[in-house]
Length: 226
Image (cartoon, rainbow, N blue to C red; front, side, top):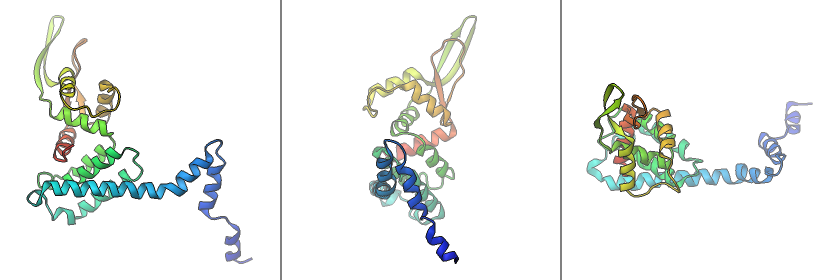
């Protein structure tokens, strides 16, 4: 039997995968439709939305603020590839738009020479829409010097205090759905190395500092008009 005839007896890989998916109890049919019928349209829709956000943000900057040479660079290609990967199956349309606007900010003259911009984009792509805007709020909250009493020892720290973050959130427009668990969201930002908790004695109020990456990320978010 020739190799051609043997190959005719082997099911196509996609057909085999579809058959495997449909055997999943209760949800196999729905998953089959999602993975093999809708996935491409979802991907294209999201990439189109991300590119539309890039276009709108570039237009809002105006010619005087745009580094047109950057948009023809290898780094721009890497940024747009990262945008396509991050946006393709992102379920939150607001985050898709955020990422497009941030990529546009990469080509704004204030940021186009920043050699850490791809790291900033990578980290911001890991955050939710709410977390990106929370980071921007933290970046706009000034650090303050306070003395914390700890028995016979006092500790002085200059930091961004939790109470000031909460006050800034209450003073601004609501950008989160339902109730915002500030502590939980701050823990996520801390785990991704965009903020760092200041170690204080005793039951003191929590306080934070932006990391170098966090400062850059917050600046990109502001430039992108988020």
